[in-house]
Image 1: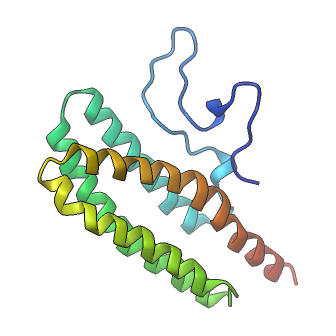
Image 2: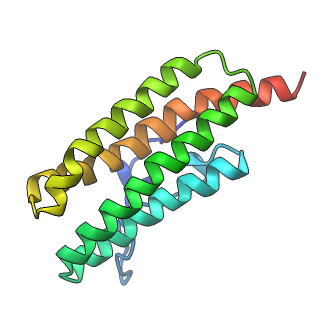
Length: 158
């Protein structure tokens, strides 16, 4: 499944305000991104909330606060969530766990390399990391994680 295109393009993913509507969130964590696995959906929702909160801070002109918040919360997320998700995948006997772990490690490594740059006010590294998180939500949560959810529900139905 994953993100569905419609006549409005990215409207389903990005927060595109309508007439008289204020743009509060950069990203909506709608049902199309939920896996139906409560713990995963809660943790994935936290990532979206982090991205939206960082965006709000940037819009409010709080760049330094946004950098610090982003660095700390994403650092916590990549360590905690990836560990939780991989433990879950192991517990259900997910056959592609090794590749899933490698994808997590690549994302974690990329972020860890940028983390000190972001802390030292490198705007390019900050923008790149924000972009990576946005793409991660769409591609990893919206597509890759959906594969393990399908496997889980198929196994559960047996």
